[in-house]
Image (cartoon, rainbow, N blue to C red; front, top):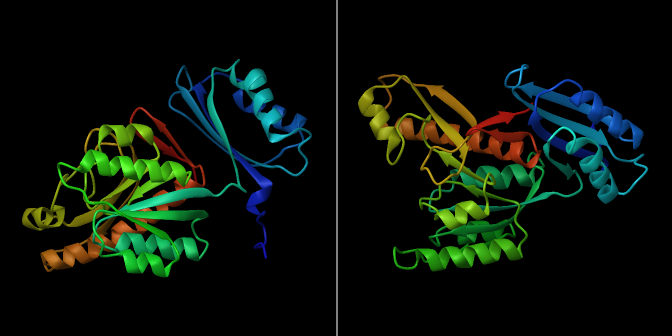
Length: 294
């Protein structure tokens, strides 16, 4: 049963646009959709600068009354609206659930959060594969009925093992990769294959305490706030566009173990929110930053 006030996902399309800002963009898009029988349900816009900046928009529309096929709608939009406004754009359809692969090492807290939320319907996606450089979590993953791929990663085998993973991701038609505390640095080839489609959870409030063991270093520094950051992965370690962040207040009373426990709670919720924004097509990247629509 569909909750009151919502539509089944099969009935909606989500259009994301970025282009040079100029008058008439919203009117042109809205008019185009109206002329093809698409009823606009939600529209959000942002401009970096109303005078010559970059314009971003996300528009959700009802599909049932479309007068053309989806392919024709997209072709018409490209010629009639996107080209004249020099748009970068994409459209996603609610009945096409995104397919995710989760990469994890030994820690299970972020993995479990995503598995639970997908099972509960809070994240509208399918987790089709879990990849790990250890075998510790294979039985857990199997209990959810999800395929598990074990990688035997060493400095000598890293490239070959990533190649196996990439082949599997392609065969599974994976839309996005989630690094749920995967303690390996991905090669440039891997990152470039899934540019702006790999989300990592960093156990620190970036840009502070990059790299390993941030909670110990936070403890030694005597911080009063700790947090977590979910970001897209780029070739620059821990410097990709930030999708979601959160903090927790701490004091001198907490030990390193306490900070780790509190931080992991933040990691779980931050990663889940970032993944949800990604699968709902609410994120656009610009100049190593993100626009995340509500």
